[in-house]
Length: 165
Image 1 (tube, rainbow, N blue to C red):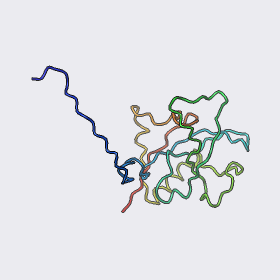
Image 2 (cartoon, rainbow, N blue to C red; image 1 turned 90 degrees about the vertical axis):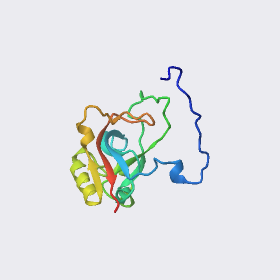
Image 3 (cartoon, one colour; image 1 turned 45 degrees about the horizontal axis):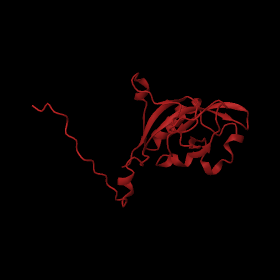
Image 4 (cartoon, helix red, strand yellow; image 1 turned 135 degrees about the vertical axis):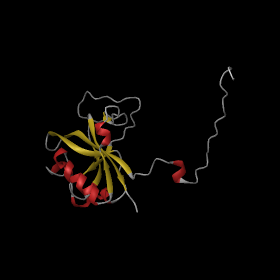
């Protein structure tokens, strides 16, 4: 029986940067999260709840996602220590990015809460698996205000994975 202090092991750090996948093991975007997030549309002078993502996903949905800069919701919003100044948010648009000019000037360019069933249908018919089981758990909170950028109190809609054959 060992009663002394626990043995410490030396940590070895691999500094070889030859392989992107080994250096950035979490950079594969085949799984992503959909959020319903409030934004202020300064062109239409209104607040909107729109569908945002945690990253630009792999697969056909990427053509419908634009990186959009959203201003603070309030002048009283302040940044945390973990704030990275990330200003562009992956945002789901109603049409492919190539067909939409400035989405703020179009009243229906952004996908919102009424579009969630259509979004789920699109995802499933294009090889994605939609998981909403985390929404039913009282133990997991995914959403809230971002630690790395200005955001409102976003709410998780689903976790989505691309199935490749």
